[in-house]
Length: 580
Image (cartoon, rainbow, N blue to C red; front, side, top):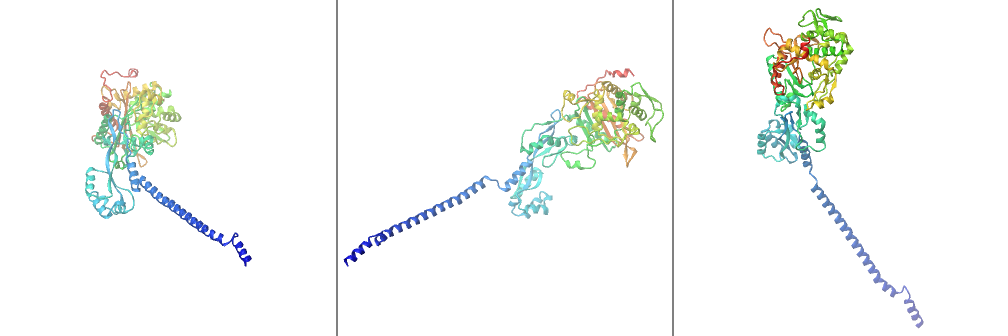
């Protein structure tokens, strides 16, 4: 027994005995408690991280929403930016305002804020009847953030809408173009659309050159832009417009137009075309008879082309001032007969051909130069291309499809070729100014700047001889009704039969008169055109010398003092007048 007890004690005290198990039991529970504590802490950490993440995201979104712009405001801001585009003033050469920005209100709506679209439509229609439509009701019932309702409204209309008290309806102040001189400058200055973007005339030119790019770069609200100065003289412009209006009424004409150009610089000092339009109401420009007949239309310029035919003949060296040509019988070429309107039926000298406006004599001069020589000369004078200038509305010439001797003859007196009056004035200025072709411009240009752009196209001698012929025609020829005492005017008439249904009409004419003054040292050129004039009195003719010439004379007598051309009554004629 003792041995067994001893053995039992020994076995109980060995590792793995109950004592060890008893000691191991508390340690295992502690481990479990420690593991449970670690799990709880991990769960708390995860919960805290999740809490921070969730509320951090919420806070971030709140900040983002606070810093961002609502969609409605974005739409409103975009619209406001688009309509606030400023434009520079346009002024004449003396600083007189021709175009300027004024502020006006425009009506808009935010449909998402409209409470009752039907009621809003009905109330708006009490101020603007054209807004009481289903289309407007649908706009106001939409989910759009911004819609235009009415652009450029009056102060009275704005006040009336205010009194309606409609939520979601508001006003934006935008720039609107205003033209103080109205229709007298319409074709030159042009006009803008409802977004104040230039779409015609100098307004479009300015946009195309630099203003459009400035707006696209985000400088739409740039204030204090430098004015755009033109070469126009507003006083000259008013005179030209007034005299053309009187001529249209006096001769019951279809249309009339005129241009005043500085022959030494190419500056256009005045340009008017009737019927015209008011740029403050540009919808008038859409009427079929509204066109700038000086730059955007082409015509057969009739006998004004004899200025170029004679200059061509003299400059070629094949014809001299002392030469004579047989005009006693009609000129027959290719089965066609060329006659004179008021023929002298005899041999005529070069000066007589010019002042009597002989088709026969001019045709014979042109034949001496020949087809190729004529084409080269017209190309050199810029009459076979679109005239280079800033105004967007410029037409190119209509040229003969093929050149023959008959074409050479008819073109010499302005038939069979159609050019713009602007091109005619440009080429005629070169004949007057000593032989330099200068591109016409609507912006100020000095004589030094003009010389850099000029191209010699005639000899100085040819220019002097043509000035003599122009003065002789004003003294003794068809241009006598434009001879204003003291201003030494030189001029050339042109009466062209219009083409109707493919044939020349004997009772529809396009008349022109080309003048320059003072002819001994030309400063300015005046070109007047009258479309389909009627006789002033029964029994009278309706030729250029009886309507376009006196109109040009009236213009010159009024604008010469404005342009600083002082009259001289100690009439000193050109040296050539004493030579021939």
